[in-house]
Image (cartoon, rainbow over all chains, first blue to last red; front, side):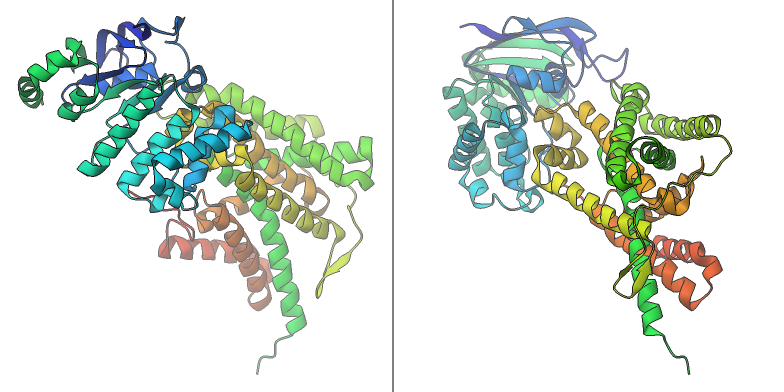
Length: 241
Length: 299
C-alpha cells in the first residue's frame, strides 16, 4: 500500500520555543484509516492543525502525493485534496444547512451538476440534513451539527480526510452513524487520518494506529497490536491525564 | 394648545429618513469590515473624503456633471483598489502568522492612515473648499421639497444598499463573506483564502464610504476633514444598531436620522447632533450591545 501522507520529523507549536508536537514521524497509507490516540494535551489536534496548514512546522517536512506541503496554506491544501474536520463544531450558524454545504463546495463552485450530485449524496447519507436543508444551522442539534460539519468538508470528495474527535460529546447512536459514514467514504477511496479519545472506537475502525504522548510517538502498529492491549492503553492514557 | 403642522412634521420625518439612510452607507462599510476582520477602520472618513475628491475631479475634468453616476462608480472603484492596496500592505501582514494584539495594531494603523490621507489632501488640494455642481434639479419626496443632490444621494444609497444586500445573499462570494463573519476557521477548511476575503472586504467597505462621499460631495462641500461628520454618524449608527449587524445598521441609521430631525423640530435645531448622542447614550444604558446584537449559540 502506498503512503498518502508522510510526516517526517515534524516539530510545531503555537508559541516560538514551546513545541507541542516534537519530532513526529508517521505514514498515512492510501485508502486506509489511520488512527492516532493519546491523552489530553498529547498534541493530537496540534498535529492535525499542522498538517492542514494552520500551523507551520519549525522543523521537518510533510509530503502529500509526493509533494512537500509544510509551507502551504489551508486553502491550497484543500485544493490539493486534503480536508479537515476540526474538533469544534465548524459550521456557519446563520447560514442554512444547504448554504453551509455549498460553501464546502467552494473549490468546484462553477460545476453545477457535480454540486447538485454531491448535495444529493450527502442528503442520502444524512437524511436529517436533507429534511432541514432550508433551516439555519444554529437550529440543529449537536449531532446534526457534527453531521453538517463533516458533510461540509467532504463535499469536495477528499483524497485525505483529517478528522479530529468526531464523536466528542455525541450520543452513542450518533457516534455509530458518524463512524459508519467515515467507513463508507473510506470504501469509496478516501484516506482517513482520525484523532479520537474514544480509544475503543478508534481502534475498531482503524487499520493502523499511533499512540502520541507528550508530543512524541510512543507506540505504533496495526490495529491488532492495539486491540490486544487496549485495556493497558486506556489505563496509560488515564494515568497520563 | 399646541397645534402640529402635519405637513411640516412629515417633511422633517422624510428629511430624517433621507439623511439617516445616507449615513447608513458609511456605517455599512464600517460594520462590514468589522464583521469580516474584527477591526474598526478609523480612517473611513478619509476614504469618504477621497471618494468626494475623486468624484469632483472626474466630473469637473473628465466626464461632466451629467455623468455623475459614472463618477460615483469610478470613485468607488478607485477607492476599492486603494483600500485593497492599503490592506494588503499594512494590515494583512499582521493577520498572517501568530501576531499578538493584531486588532490593536490594526487600529493604530487605520488611525495613522487617516492622519496621512488628511495631510496628503491638505498638500494636494490646499486650504480650499471645493463643491462639485449639483447632480439634479430640486424635486419633491412626497411632501418634502429636497435638493436634487440629496434626492440623488437618497436613491443612490437605496440602489447601492440593495445591490450590496443581493450580493451578500445571492452570490457565492456574498455567502463566503457571511461565512467568514461567522466562522473564520470554517471558511478556511472550506478551501477559501480568508486573507483574500479580508482584502476584498476592506476594499468593499471603503468603497461604500467613498460612495457616500461622492454622492454627498455637492451637498456638504469638500475639504480634507469633510469625512469627520459622516464617520461620527457612522460610528453612532453601528453602536446603536449593534456592531456587525447589517439590519442593525439600516434600522439605526433611520432612527438616528429621525431623532435628529424631530429633535430639531420639537426642541432646538441648534442641538441637532446632541439628540443623536443622547439617543446613543440611552441605547448604551438600556442595551449596551445595540438593538440588533447578534447572539451566538454557545455549546
